[in-house]
Image (cartoon, rainbow, N blue to C red; front, side, top):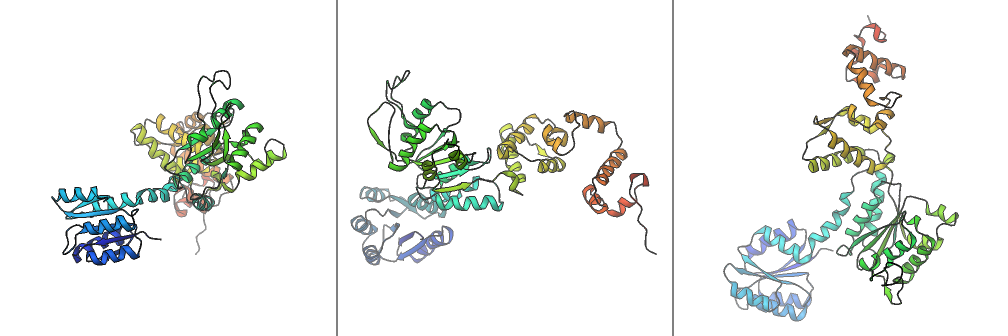
Length: 451
């Protein structure tokens, strides 16, 4: 539902200008009153999210609107509009409970900024836009984000599944930022390769003297994230003892610090992520089935890059822009290099793309990334590296060939690969007529013109 703003002003032009800002620019709803009497009736019979009232009007002043609003609906903020230079009157209004004042003549940008501040519209817009940090438009990704948007405003526990490097942590951050908990902390717990006692202390905290080396009280992540979100990464690696305590936290919303007797209420939301099948871990006896059900109230899957067709180039562009900005460079990637990157499998998913592009920019001295700059594994998957695995050997070979020899070699390879003449012409960027005009030694049979 749109937020509704009451505007009280005896000047029609002023009300019309404010309606343009409030309704047409900001997309809110506006109710207007041309006198204090009408405004008081509206305040007594309807609810508003914000009241803007002129101070000086014929008859009663806007101070009466402020006083009645403070009596009838004290939670509704009131902004006083007053002529430039009326500082004393504005100060008196603030003492009586006005949220702020705006000086006339009003500036559209100032009005919009102040209304956004009062109604916290900026934060709500940020919440809606938080998922824009996830780059890509593939159907698989859009389906995941759609469900994430639906789950974000709730307190439901969420389990994010997906291969390593697919962006599970980023998705968890976006959910937090789109939730009512966005002003609370987003804390991360990395479970893999963390000893059990250290992990328990990290999650639940400990009291002084609870174990050797515990020289003072330590506040755990669940206390630290009160009112916010705890993101448990690689939850499948949690030791069974820690799983038992976590199950109680999710069921009863309570826990104790290690070595302590005080029961602490859990006020944090839990989002967990795994790159393993927790269902398989349950079968193997390495993960509690009841904990699995508690974690997967909402299950999201971050798809691997290989099924996100069309998302690779936007990701490359994004990481290229970031790397250029951080290194103060202006490196580009050639069309052929991009095509070779497109054909690569990217088993490390988005993390591998990020690392690759960043490395290419850092190492580049020419201003453009060409095939010879690409990592060995990309060249190998494109059939462009020698068996020795050295990308340099390909370029050593090309450097010794003439342009005609390179052209003949390309055509020969494509013919042996079973490509048609139409495909070859398209891939080389030449017309079919030009292809037929090449010498017969290239292996292209001459076309017989019709007579």
